[in-house]
Image (cartoon, rainbow, N blue to C red; front, side, top):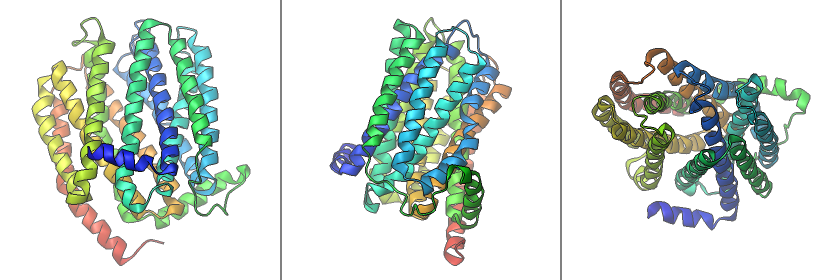
Length: 421
């Protein structure tokens, strides 16, 4: 009920309501699009994609955003964020339509992967814009609730979109699913155009297009000098805490394509993904209630300890239900960490650096998934039937729970004693 009360209270704020609608339509369409992509590439018998091919797909889709992220940060900090979101969503619509044209062919050509790369890059650009815009539509006291409600409802919209897309893919050709995703992106464009002012507070330094490259270098040099040490620690934490999610995702996918496949691997993997999404939702329900009582870092440490127990007890069992339950637990820990990190970044990073901070955040978020998928591609067998990932992830969560309080205390003391910049 705390989550629903927070959602009802926030939806009474017109600025938040418009940003919320923009996010829901954007992430819902992304879920439909990714269902089409999974059907066309991962569960298509004609493709026969192995673990290394899956890891390569992760890299093609996510890692190149590291090249786009710095530009996104400059634009989000120096150009009107509403305009940037509208342009990004419009370009995303055009690119999704181009993917639909290419999907008519059953093969996955280079053009297909280049277009998919652009779609995902633009999508991460949009998500960074949503995070940077949030402090402009709620009060500081509402940030914890907003950081719980907005991303979690976006994730639920993404999961519902994915379920709808999977149903459409089972009933018809992939190109139809991509066209439905394009219709959702068109709605997202309309929603983004209705946003209120969402920053930046000072847009006087907006560069011309020819000056963007110079702005990237100078802007990140400024961020390197002035980004608080606590923010740097949080960005590193984002990278490390994505490793369990990525490794578990790849292992679960391999298991449901092989040993767990009883004729409908897509459905089994979809249920496991739904369990992970349920973990995200539960974390969103409890975080607004527990975070103010336990404070940020102790709350995250307790979540890590729950991750230790789940990985150690469930990881070695290697059954469909245990992998789904483990996905639930890791999803919950991931969402607790994300909500807390979002709130702490918004509290400790000045607004003129917030766009760049969240662009780097997205780079770290994606890089963690790519690194874990690459490690899994090298170390996991094609069947996915090994017990070491659960043990390794339990050790990782335990190390984080022991190290984070001390590292946060040192970073806070250093920031208070000698602020950067």
